[in-house]
Length: 157
Image 1 (cartoon, rainbow, N blue to C red):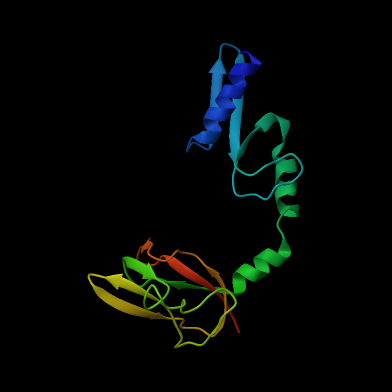
Image 2: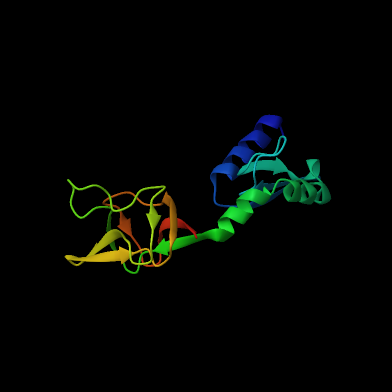
C-alpha cells in the first residue's frame, strides 16, 4: 500500500461518520481511529485521524487528562440551560422593530422574559426560571427550535 493510498483513507475516514477503521491487505494491517472532542495538544488535533500505532493508548490517556482545562469544567457546571418547552419558532423580541428581550451579559431574574416561541400562531413567552447572567444565546432570531433544545446559557447567582 502506497503512502498516497493511506492518506486517501485518512481523508475519507475524517470526512465520514465512522470513528475507527481496520484495514487488512495480505500481511499488512492498518488501524485508524478518530480522536473526537479533545482540545488540541501537541500534534493531536480534534476530529483528525491519527495512527493508533504511533500513539500508545497509555500516552493518549495521559495527554487527554493533561489537556482538560480545569476552569472550563468548573464554568460548565455552574451554567444553567434555558430550554425550549415546545417545538416552534424562536423570537428574541416582541416585534422586529423592538430590542431583544435579553442579550449576552444581561442580568435576569426567574420571571424575566428571555424570548418567545411561536407555535401554531400562538406566541409563548419564555421566562428565565433562574437568577443570573446570560452567558450565551444559542439560537438565532427566527430559527426553528425543538422541544428541549437549549436556547440560552445562564451563569446562576
